[in-house]
Amino acid sequence: MTQVGKLILVTVDSYNIELIPATTWGKSLAHLARQKGSGFRSIWDKIRERELGRADRKCEICKTSASSLICHEKWQFDDAQSVQRLIGYEVTCRECSNILHLGRASEDKVLWEKAKVHFAKVTGMEENVLDDVLDQAMEEWTQRSKHNWSIDISHEPLAFGFEKKLNNLQPSSQQERKWQGIS
Ligand SMILES: [Zn+2]
Image (cartoon, rainbow, N blue to C red; front, side, top):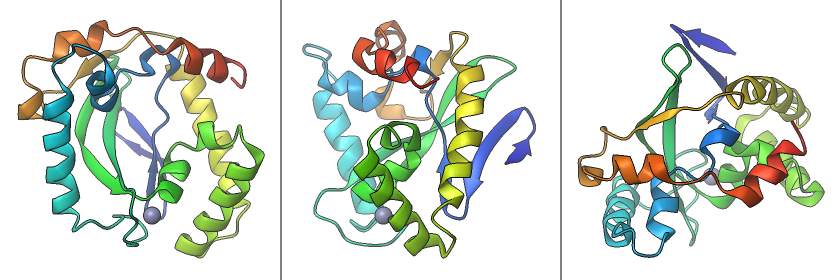
C-alpha cells in the first residue's frame, strides 16, 4: 500500500486496485451508457473505440490480444474532499479485469481461483499474495463505503454536460446488496 498525499492506492506490480465504494456503485460512464434514454451510448462507444485504439487492442496489463477487451475507468479517490475523480482508462482482458475488481471476483470461488492463477502468471508472485491484497483493499473499501462521494468526470471532454446525470444515478441495488454481504 502506497500513500500519495491523501490518496491511498493498493498497487501490486501492474495492478492498481481501486474498489468502488458501495455508495457510488454503478456511477460510471459505462453504466450511464447502459441507461435507456441517457443519450450517452454513442459517446461511450466513441470513448471505448478511442481507448482500444490507443492500447493497440491489447490488454494494457498482461499484453494479450483478447477478443473481448474491457475499457476500465480509472478513478482516484480524494478522501479529504470525498471526490471520486476520473483520471483515465485502462484497457484490460477479462482475467485482468477480475483482478482489478477483486472484491467482486472473490465472491465466486471458481472466478477467484482463476484470478489468482492469472495474477501469479502475470506478476511472478505467489497466488496467495492476492488474498492479502483483497484484505487490504476491503479494509479501504469499507471506510470509503461509509459516506457519499461526488463524481468528477471533467477529465473526459466527450462527457461534458453529463456530470449531473451521472451523479444522480442511484447506486445499483443488486450490487449494493451483494457487496454489503461481504463488508
Ligand atoms: Zn490482461
